[in-house]
Length: 355
Image (cartoon, rainbow, N blue to C red; front, side):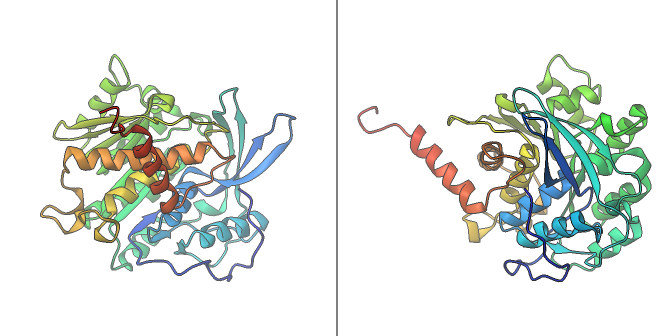
């Protein structure tokens, strides 16, 4: 999505709730190949998409990385502000915005080439990330992944993740490997695995598991193996049209897939919206008709019931399904996700005659 240009001090579209999630990682512009060969610019990057998706679902979210003062950086900043996201580094930096060239296959699946040397979102340190999080009294969750996990940035994100886990916050890591972004794939894999050792919630796709060379006869076996190799409480495995699994350390596992017909425009940002849905549903409290997990014995990262696992997974899938029916990453609001879930319940509830 391309946003109208506003100045860096423009007011957000609405007042954000208390900041409960902080995200760190790439913010860039995707140049998406159109059928006629033209390139369509869309604000993106996995962490940026996740951040906007969280804000649009009403989760108080803080984006930790700096943004450029160039034209694209101002649009990125406006996109976050429009979603109600707060900026930990509101002053723009002189470095340029990053770019990604996205080519879509016949099923709308994107492959990427990245241009990220010396870019704005990489002008950050572990100390700056740690200090920004320490300044937030209501912070419960930190999230990162994708390009933040390249080996060259290990000294930035690994110490920050370790500090957040030690501080008692829930750590979320989206493996989301982009091998096309690196020259040293083994070092990249090693760094991704190091980040996963800090996570309470891991998100991977079947493609990620293959890229990590996780052993197993199929994606689910690989996912179970990966969960055992980390201290994570949960692992979410996405399978594209095959739906998704949500695994819990105690052996509970639930699977769901989209039951309603989908008109897929493209899959850009679908995984990011899925993860935003997971986090949103895990954080939901009494104001949204759910038990506040953070207030339970054991806190936010303690295991949950199978019913709650399934509810969380359905919310995440509905978030992703909404995204794929629109061009680019266009995350839904919380209300739109709940409406989709209500329609699904209506479509799948047997009628009195059928009963």
